[in-house]
Image (cartoon, rainbow, N blue to C red; front, side, top):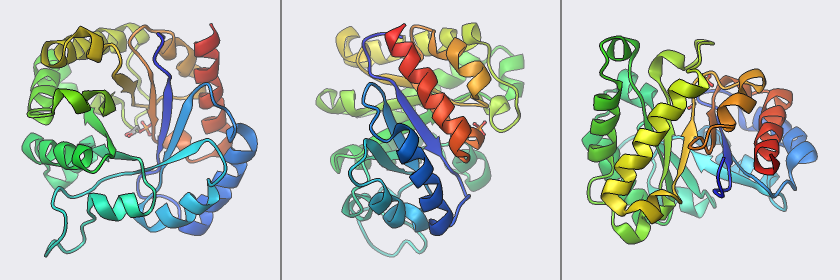
Length: 258
Ligand code: 13P
C-alpha cells in the first residue's frame, strides 16, 4: 500500500430493502463509523439510497450508487441520472460492473459515456474492468483490460482524472469464492497504473485508486491489500454482513499502518 488512502466499497448488488440496509448501517457505524484512516463507501440499491444516506449522517461512511444513466433527464424508463444521485448526496457510482456488461449487454462505449457524465456531475466513477475465465486461459487478460480502460476512459479530461477510481474485478472471481492471488492481482493493477500513466502522466496515475474485487474476504484481504498497487476493495458478498465488512475495513486500516 502506498500513500493513497485506501477505499473499501461495499457493492450490495440487488440485496437489502431500505429497512434491512439501515440495520446493517447501524452495526457498521457503531464499529467503524468514525474510522478516518481509510474511506468506506456503501453502495446499496437505488431504493435504499435515501434511507442509508440518512443513517450514515454524522459518520465517516460514504454513499455510492451501483449504476447511472449518462443522460441528464428524459424518456429513459427505469433509469437514474447523475443529478438524481447527487440530490441524495451520493458521491460515488459504480460503472461498467461485469454484471451490467454480461447480463444487461452494456459495452465499453456506454461505460465511457457514464464515466464522462459522472465526472461532469462531480461524482467519482468506480469503473470496473476484468477478464472472463476463458480470456485469462487464452492469455488475453492484459489485452482485455487495456481495451476496457482505454475505451472506458476515452476523453476524460486530465483535470478530472484524480477523481477516477478503477476496480479490477476478474469475472471468474466474482461470487465464486475463487480469488486472484495477490501476485496475479498486483500484476494487473500495475499494468492498469501504467495505462493510466500513459493517458494522464505518472504523477496523476500515482494518485488514482485501483481497487480489487472478486471474493475478497477477511481471510484473504491482508495479503491482497499488502500489494503496492492494490488500494482497497470493491466487496460483494462480504459487504452484506456487518462482521465480515467491518473485518475488511480493519484490514485496510492495518495496511495503512503497516
Ligand atoms: P464478490 O465479493 O461477491 O465476489 O463480488 C465482487 C463484486 O462483484 C463487487 O462489485
